[in-house]
Amino acid sequence: MPTVGFFSDPACNRHDMDEEHPESPARLDAIQDQLLSSGMEYVLRFFDAPQATREQLERVHTPEYVASIFDRAPSEGIEALDEDTRMNPHTLAAVLHAAGSGVDAVDRVIAGEINSAFCAVRPPGHHAERNKAMGFCFFNNIAIAAAHARKAHGLERVAILDFDVHHGNGTEDFTAGRDGYLFCSSFQSPYYPFTGTGELPDNIVNSPLEAGAGGDALREVVEQQWLPALKKFNPQMLFISAGFDGHIEDAMAQLRFKEEDYLWVTEQLRQYADQYCEGRIVSALEGGYALSALGRSVVAHLKGLIGN
Image 1 (cartoon, rainbow, N blue to C red):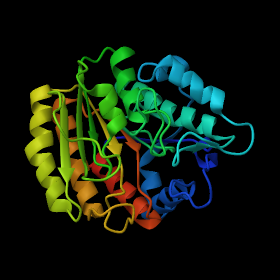
Image 2: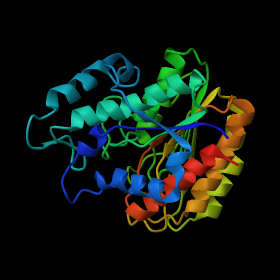
Image 3: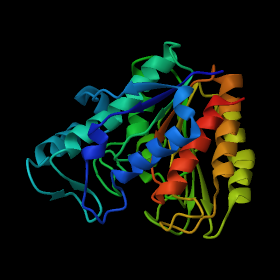
Image 4: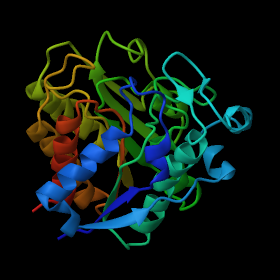
C-alpha cells in the first residue's frame, strides 16, 4: 500500500478572521473528526508542518509583498488586507506553516520517505498572486511547493491541477507562460474571482463549468482536457489544489460534486502519477466550507491517493 503523508500544524487552527467567516478553524476540526471516524489515521503518516523561509516564499512572491505580510501582521486585533482576507495575531505563523507544509512534503516525497502527501492546512493559497493577498489567501501554498520541487530538487517539469470551485487566479498569475509549469483548473464560471477566461498561454488549461454542473462534467474535463495535457507536457511530479467547495452540500457556489467525484479525479491523477511520475503527488487543501461534506470529501481524496 502506498504511504501517504498527512501534514498539518496547530498554528493553522489559530488563524481566525472572525466567528462569521466561512474560512474558519472548524474546517480542520471537521477533517480530523472524519479521519477518526473513518479509521484513516491508521493508514497515514502524520507530520508537523515546518515554517516556510523567506527564500522559499520569494520563489513565487515578490520580496516586497512577502515583507508587507510580515510588516502588517498585528500583535492584537484584526488587520484587513481586503474585504475577505484578514490577519489576527496568529495569522503570520499559520501562513508560514501552511506554505512550509508543501515544501516539507516535496522533500519527503522526492526522498522516497512517502509516496504522496496531503497538506491539511489553512489559510488556503490559490488566490494569492505574486504581489497580492485575496480570497482568504496570503501565500500560494501549492505554487510554493511546486517551485521548491523545481528550484531545490532540479525537476524540469511540474504540473498543478486545481478542482476548487473558484478559479486559481493566483496560481495562474505565477505559472502563466513560465517554463517548466503546467496549470489545469476547473471552476464555476462566471463566479469569483471572475478570471480564467480569454486568451491563454499554452501551459494553462482552464475548464470553466456552468452553475449546476455535476460530476459528469468534472470527469469530462479530466478525461478530455487534463489527461491529454499531462501526457503532452510529461511532468515529473503532480501538485493538487484540493478545493472541496464544489460539493453539492456547499453553499459557497452552485456546482454539484459528491465525494465519489473527488475520489474518482484523485484516482485518475494517482494512476497517471504512478505510470509517469514515480507516483509523486503533493496535494494541499484549498476551499470547502460545508463542514461534514468537507471532512467526507477529504477522506475520499485520501483514499484516492492511497489506492487499492
